[in-house]
Length: 103
Length: 168
Image (cartoon, rainbow over all chains, first blue to last red; front, side, top):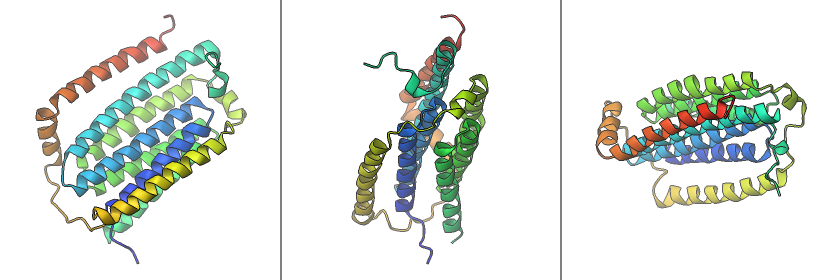
């Protein structure tokens, strides 16, 4: 009944994680949770890279995963810094209420 | 067999944590769920014999980024945001995006599973020296991207400090 785990399982899991993260970015109003959803998307990408790295017996996929993690960390740091500046000036963390540039 | 059981356990942790992350009203609960999800992803790295990335995931994500998130949740006052409606009502767009991208991904994974023999059972290779092999490739073939990444981290540090400063 239990099939052995192949690359397809990991690819399906990474696709599911990517879609959950996309839904979170699109429907949530709280900016903190939008940033967390972006972390989910990047983790889905990393699972994909690791699965292909294992499948091809090639370590370069893991190198790319390290770069993705680096970018994710930088993005989280800058995003949360922007969030603190926004909260100090506008007293809100809800994305819908930040509409100064909205036409 | 043990591999299969561990895969489904970690996949369950990852997906349940992800769903709880995007549905909780309280941002602290979301952060805790995201920690569970990231630990599940770390377990999947270990199953794929990527030991170095397992350690990086635990130390950097669970130990670094999530502590940063929890600090920011404490710094900004989220009580008022928790009382407001949590979803912006863009369910139609979310549904269309999810169905479109999900259908596309499912099609290509199904097709790739047969065409590229992705569905064949991987043969076990000894994973000893994973960190050494990563270091070999990273510091010879990918040295320039590595240095660029370090410059980008420096820019991110300076940028976030300037953003969070009281006076510009």
